Length: 294
Image 1: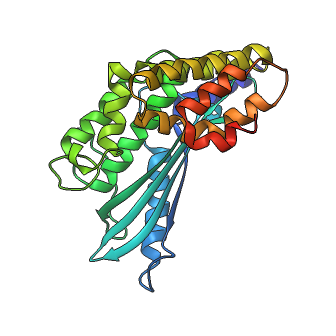
Image 2 (image 1 turned 45 degrees about the vertical axis):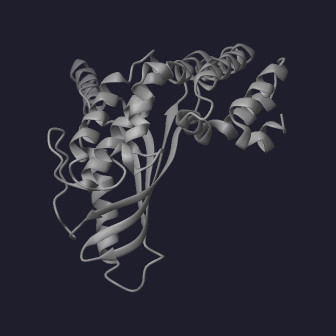
């Protein structure tokens, strides 16, 4: 009986320690291009998914039920001389305590990507060198996802991951690929991590912590208290609006959260949400048609 128990403990320990960080889905959509070697895209899809899900990205141990769900959707618009061009939609979500619900954390469309890829090439992410724009993109977004997830569990918990992403940006700027430099546009990879790490935008990271750990994670025990914390998080986010009304991070937040906020504030129990609705209309006017349903 003791041997059976010890075997169970070893099995349980192995499950926790060996579980990797991600449950990733990768899609490579090539419907916009003509007839060519379509199998190359299926190979890329499978290889990237396997790499993200089996590679060890942190030193932390994730249980199988703690894996981060994320999606990488490549929309291919051109494929010439083994160079893939198009856009990349990156999404991630976060588990909520005492529930089967997962809350969206990131929904970002990187509109201008390109990278060389040869079918069956080995994929390898090197955090100390920028060897491939494809793996640079993957490593960058993996660290952004890890940072947002960590920030939602502890105050400023994602700093180390953002620093990793910033390091990738610094190395990538010499590559000539678009999206890594300050001069490539206002809403690119450079500005995403730079704005997150800027102390002037601390309200963004603070709101993530309040919204999730003090808000959604409390709803199973006290729904009203959880809703009130979500409203506090929105009020905290308004501090960012007061400093930078057109802040990139406001769009990042609401691109992921707008529908969820409507769902949270529309359900019971009743709370006084008039001030919150006014704040939402002020700091995210593009979603006013959604706020008007509250």
